[in-house]
Amino acid sequence: MSRHQRHFERLHQPQAQMAAQQSGSTLIWPFGAIEQHGPQLPLVTDALFADQVLNAVLDRLPMECPVWRLPTQTIGFSPEHGDFPGTLSLPAELLIQMIGSVGSQVASMGFRRLVLFNAHGGQIALLQVAARQLRRHVPSMAVLPCFLWSGVQGLSSLVSDEELNHGLHAGQAETSLMLHLAPDLVGSARPRDGMPDAMATSPPPGWSLEGAAPTAWLTSDLSETGVIGDSRASSDTLGKALAERLIEHWYDLLTALLSSDWPGTSRGPAS
Ligand SMILES: [Zn+2]
Image 1 (cartoon, helix red, strand yellow):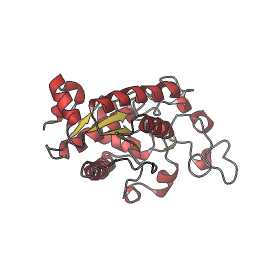
Image 2: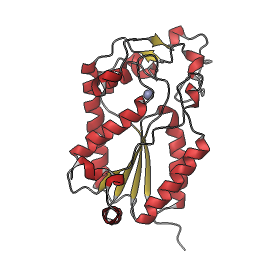
Image 3: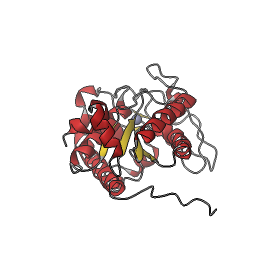
């Protein structure tokens, strides 16, 4: 199957109907954002990452795998960047409703699994809520909300600990990945900003930006440039290594999903 035929929106109606009704039919819906990514990265960064990493993974999957992709949902939920003009954000309720509406339709066509393939860290929780609500509504279809950078092994051998822990946005990893995927879109600035040693105010002891006791931060709490991290050591070589790790990781996870019978048959309470 060529990359072309993996795009659901390019199928002809009879092909779409057959696709949905194949055993284990799986649809992947990429999610990104249009939001400030500092002075050096384009607004479309997260959407471009979701789109291109997914295409590379799909290209590697065997032709016979029953998997298709939807167009990328480019505008997401980005209120944390709202103080920086350029950012576009949709209401959480609207996105949850949209996922519920499209999800119910693809479930009624016969799709067995819908993967929400997200590259924007600020909407992880939102997609989890949307996925759980959709699943409750259409129990026959599995809904899997995942985040591009989560659970990827081997990142610590590529990116420094400081950057892994504190480089939340437009830092070394994202700048490098963009230098590899779309170098023409990368500007020349390389800020270091929003790091713990440079914050005007830090979270109280025991609290942190993300993690166990998070603080629902706004970028303007932390950063003047919009960068949260250190982009100075970014390189296309690192970007290539990161891309390879991400592609391998999601290839493995999608292969595991496609070879499984998840979500199986419902057990439910004994009647
Ligand atoms: Zn990003």
